[in-house]
Image (cartoon, rainbow, N blue to C red; front, top):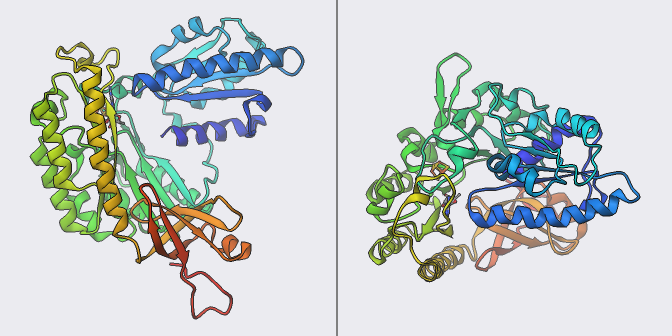
Length: 454
Ligand code: 5AD
Ligand code: SF4
């Protein structure tokens, strides 16, 4: 979502004459868009700010002054504290106020003249009653694969998680607004759209005819947009995995056969301590339902090891669940106490070395599963949306329906250029832990050497 938000910040700044530059040295305005989910991410912000302060000072001596902004959830959580610790920061604003960037930039130019050390940074960490989406300009093209935020915030309050405090209460964008943005993205060249939300399957947007639509209905409507070949959504909560959403995976071809459905732990005691509101059994039932609807669906999850109170037996239950499910990939983290969350006040902290040992064991099991999953694709021909340039002139890279990163070498630059931005049939030559290598399947019917498209 930070990628999406950063793109929207660019959209809002474009009318003021701002455009992207390659390095911070060349920038008149640098915005760090930050994440507060774990301590490590939050710490990075201050070390990065230290580097920017030096750049800002260098520039102040000759060139136009540089303005520094901090956006996102660290800004939201730190607010005025950030300007106290880093007085050279000009703007501090949370995820819900970036539509006000033009005013903030104008004020900062007027009041602080963008000079360093002023300590008069502008702070906007409100949760405004107006919705930023109503004030943002049309989304600019994001290329073949685009993000679209449909839902923000979270009301689930998992005990370990800071999101409900930094992103705020759950909010779903109206259906009409989402459809308009999706059409806009497709007109701009998007063939794949990933619907985003902190708890995306809690979506319950106002429908065009009054009432509310859940995510399954929205996806079905989006599937009708001509030219939109692929739909994904992330991240979901098991409790919001409604029956109609599960069956949608079997009914809507353009809904990709890959789902990121975090379980966090396989132990019911820990799930209860986490306030996840589901058991391991509930989760496994959902997975069974998804596989019944779409047998080739690939699954991914998030895991936290070392949540307060996690015993060896609890951790073994997580390992058991992973073996039962068989994941295509997963993200795993050591529990990191976040200020203000219920888990941060819990006793029975797990020692750091135990967390590290558990994380290593869990990651090696996931890696094994990932390698096995990837190897089943060798020799198969699969459609890949090529949305990235590769390491050489003639290499391109993209994603399979199952989210593999796939790279392919074409014979000529012309062939690579023609295939770029399209969904192309590729034969998988070899599997690596994090990617697949492929070769084009030539379209026998075409007069030119055209790669076969879908
Ligand atoms: N410590 C460790 N991991 C966390 N996550 C969220 N909060 C914490 C925390 N306090 C992880 C969860 C979530 C993912 C986005 O980040 O696994 O699903
Ligand atoms: Fe955080 Fe996700 Fe739980 Fe919401 S559902 S509190 S975003 S982990």
